[in-house]
Length: 303
Image 1 (cartoon, helix red, strand yellow):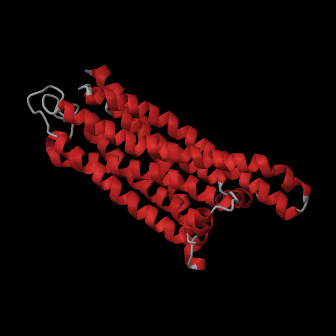
Image 2 (cartoon, one colour):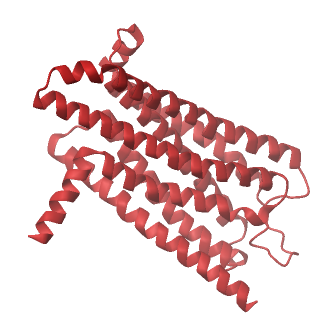
Image 3 (cartoon, helix red, strand yellow):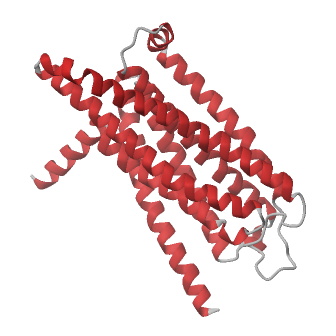
């Protein structure tokens, strides 16, 4: 029991450390863009998406902290089913929203950077702000519809030795639960990944094909524009790599959970907080505005 308690406390400590780092990074992003909006009364479409991603990540990390405490320290007997219904809904809804927002961020950058004469792209560039609002509204609605059914599977088993670790219906509806987790993985992992890959590959292909033509006009503005586009492409590829690493882990765990192995459920929460905490680091490094402010703050402290 002592070893088990020590292992639980170590897991809790690691999770809390990751959550604190993630909250600081996401809070910085939200603060910068809120101050930008206060100053100019407007935000670029990609800035709106990044701000919403950071806000969702903060809530995800705070709810995950509550879930970890309840799950690992066996506090569920004090709260009953409702605490898991609320936390599991949020821990599915917000991370899936963040994934789709990441996919839309890749798509928006693709529309902004890639120059083609397609009528669809031309119209989308002209109405990008309205398109982003529709993307966000559709994503929020879709993720609500996909996250709500998870609450129907939750029921604490009070006659077991691990009440807080075994709170899904393991004996009934296993086929329905498997179908649900498969559909959830397809609609909130595979489809966004396809959109991310196509958008990012479109940017990389465009930069490779047009880099020579851009280099012919050796002006400071064209050089800075190429560097900015390259930085964006690297940032998006890093986000995709982080997502693939987390999503592949979550997918394998989802399959085990669907088959009744609920003791690995905590791995899904780890992937959520790792992605929510790792993505702001990538966004800060890859976004010129966010990176420049950090550099200025560091130079001011050194001075």
